[in-house]
Image (cartoon, rainbow, N blue to C red):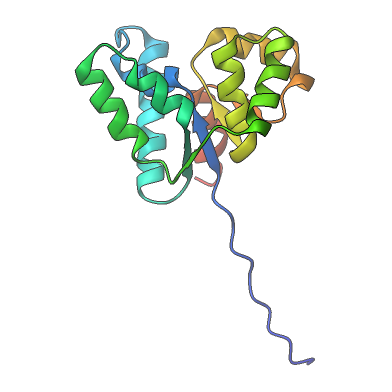
Length: 162
């Protein structure tokens, strides 16, 4: 016996960045199966964040986009969802540069900005935006983060050890 004590390393919580499409999913037509399942996945992700099992990362871009929502009830509800985030990232020169690189590669400006924020502080970028998801499949080497929809994330990560 050498006298060394083995202390288990604390497992880091997954850090998740959700774009505006995810935060607004509960307001979409819930009669569509896909929409309903993505909404349920989003609510489960919120629950996991509230209990501390995962971390949600927000950004100044999300706050700005939400402030532009003309529907007061939605704006307030999304603000309450954003309040669950354990960290909010502010725009800086590195994020601007990364977003511009993505934009120059054909990604829509706001999507490029969200992706750059996610790449800065998260392990996953979740979106319900089919345009982003299609670009990820077509150009996987363009992105420095795993990007998927909320349902895929829940199936992959949340139930991994179930």
